[in-house]
Length: 183
Image (cartoon, rainbow, N blue to C red; front, side, top):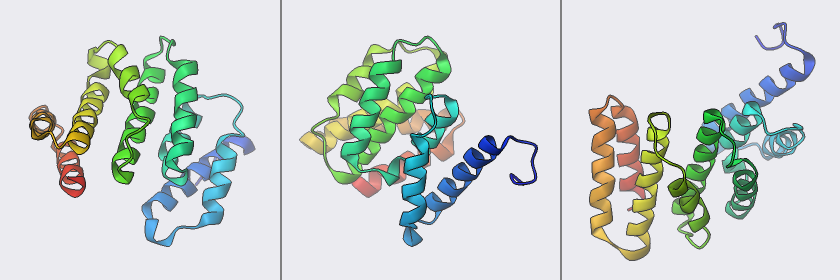
């Protein structure tokens, strides 16, 4: 479909890259290092951090090491956090949340304060409520992991319930599965 579309050749290349990246993420057991390296290279050939580059990088963060992701996301947040665009703020939250998820999966919490501080400095509003809630879940979960603070898990459970109550039960279930897996 992409090949037959009326997109420019450059846009076709980017769309094919996005498709390849998503297919690669769906098959973690059969990873193709060549495709991963090509995606990593192409992401940073895109001249500006526009919405496509944000999305492509956010979806491909698993192709990078935790240390690389921490460095890249820190630079992106430092550069773009003063923007007023809601799309940029949502993108920055997505990146920060992904860093927390990767940190939990690797049980490495040394460098996470920057991302939590960033999220705490952004005022909550209806457009960011989902992102702030997810960030809060992962922040409390890290608190539990670092200090074995069981009260932090109660906050996680409350956030999971709130997602279910407001009509996002699938996301609540995903958070519950994540919590159960990494607890």
